[in-house]
Image (cartoon, rainbow, N blue to C red):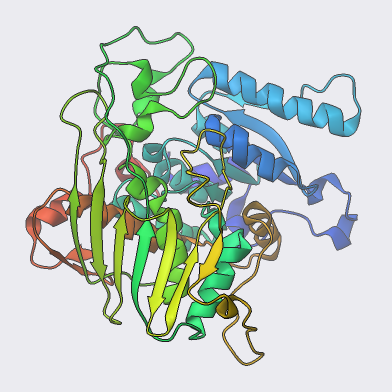
Length: 458
């Protein structure tokens, strides 16, 4: 469908395309007017949606969830029950049955009543619906990683720039105070000039063999596969048919790159905050990694990645380090982690090792007060709340597409480096490997028609 026709059909028109709010301001109709609500559509209704994104968005009074969508009809129906139950309790009505269910997000995007979408799909289904949502004039909350490939990320970045929609990447560590405090202390020289950063990320284990199984009647498996190659269905390669535990697709390279992108975008984004490299990237990358020799799952296990930056900093990432970020300077170090926080109950967090969320070589470093004329980083209380505020103000959110894309690129080139036994030189501005056609060939993947960002019509 051509972009102009799509925009006209959604009744959003020019105003949405140039970045004006589709929400009628409170001073026109009053703060409780229905038109002052941000109507939300949920794309993807699995583990992260239920445990994190829906919960952390629906609780704001300025929002109203009006639609849910999933290619698994059972999960879509479960999400409807979840949303309807929330509003039933909130409104005190004996029955609430207003949430619309979709099996195809493209049909949802044509609903002119939807102002914004939350995308909580598997990694290979991040960029395409986000691009199409942008061209439909919908603001977007997008789970990380931002894209499956570097080219996808570039295409999404362009779509957001072209349309002026508000896109927030779900790197919620920016809303956790310890990450901001650590970054501010580092940026203001409390540990002297930083020369090394160590990032701890776990790997994933190998899995069992998995014979082909009949596709469940409730799953549109062809659409679930999307732009990725057609393969036989097996449950541990997709998601559980009962319950919402950690899905098997996270451990398959067709749909993501494992922990280097799964948690990597969180930590690389946070590290860049402290390193003041949010809008650039490393100048080289080299890596070692173990990959399973049998079984269905094939993402990296134990690994080691080294990034060098033009500002003289070197970043090492490995499962051998405690999960978190350690900034090392000439005068000391600061370590920061999530502590015992979990976005989902099935997150593989080692609570004991990561229990202390903020630490330093000298406790006095953490007591240091940032002066009025020093660097103060943006402070927010909630990642989803910041997105909602920006939908109304039309200001850029804390994890906008430019920052989100750069953090994701660092993850993706790390995964690419794991495929080679040599150092790769990287141009962070042009986003290409220097004089390396073999590595550059991995910046994009062939996409299966009719799915994929290459087939989105702007």
